[in-house]
Image (cartoon, protein in one colour):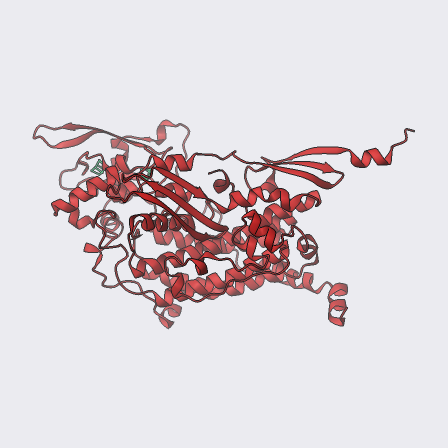
Length: 189
Length: 399
Ligand code: SF4
Ligand code: SF4
């Protein structure tokens, strides 16, 4: 039994050190957030509630009812009923998405060949009825207008719908380690 | 007054059901304990409360769309499980991901290891009675979740890797903030150690508890920190390197006594090693593609091509609806080092786009079955410490 051990046992040094740390945390800035009062912005590219893209030139949905999103969906929660309009263009008569089954994997976004479905940054979904989570085409289009209209939607598709550069080979401006530069911008991040 | 016969009352047995709703059993684990006084005579784990049939579901999904299922195995380190899955499928299909994707995957699996160990530290200490650590560890875990959100848009169920690469490239902002994290994290580790490393209650509750010898650990099939705590340097990142683990330097920390305290020390040391691996990955991250360009039959073609190139369009349609239908027939077992131990995927392929059989070897399941060995003969209170040290996540125990 060394002298050091004796001091430690009698004077509870390790407990005092821990208490000092607690006290330090007590007087420093809190890391928590008062959530509903202080809402948190989701990061760009967040996988939140879905939206169907509205084509600004026609005012209709972009979807061509190919059914690929429904085919890849691991939760099997997309149901598409297609139809043809007067000039033979295929369109989704009904496009239904059961959000309560969805697991927010974003595979549907990746599978869509024309970029007709997107995931918005909206994550606060709570409601009083199950029906509110059964999305129809109209509701999904309204989501687009509400959360992704304007620049945001374009940005989204530039960044997250074309995530892999053309032919996987064009890598200009790729993120690389910047050494000391990283430290300079660290307070900004 | 009635005389109590000491002989018989000491032998009287009491059956205690610990769980499935017990706050210290980390999910829905039920342990039926037969007690003699305060000593555990027999311990029977009951698992299966969280069974979702992931293996069977995987056999009804294509290789591409079964990936999000693996998020739900170990939901505290879903990134590692995604990586384990894609590495296994790549080995089956013979796809080689590009260098950059390998480094990114190594980096994110180490982030997952840090995040998983943080949750382990928080809840393990909480079970034993040190609540403060919980608050500190969750502060850093939140940081990692934010980084994951920045990376791929989801905080827990990430689904980030893809067969042949990763979903999207990392952004400069992400790299910079991850670098910042790795710079601050060692300081945070010192804080946790200030709180519990020498704490006399912590030492009393962990030293000499749940002891397992190296030989028994190997016979029980323990892996990960559970076997390294007993002094066996078994780590698949060294023995069967995948992704970029053969290009980074790290040590495999081991314990000596195989008790709960040693396993705690092993995991604390793994924090530092993982932090070092993340830093090396950031420094060495090469420029280049993040998706295998030479595997058009297995990976989704670039979006720009789909509407222009007929062949790409056909590939896209077939891949999405039927999966990689040119998969070779055969079997493969591929294992990676998940935060909790050896995670193995076994596939039998019949040449179609869906696996004929998908079997998952999850570390927690084996560790749950080792609980009788670890607890029998010890006190009830130590059962809680042993559950904590085994780092069970019921999502992967039951699958
Ligand atoms: S996010 Fe995933 S689960 Fe949800 S609809 Fe899309 S593919 Fe299906
Ligand atoms: S959203 Fe896209 S993938 Fe789904 S049916 Fe419409 S066009 Fe096809």
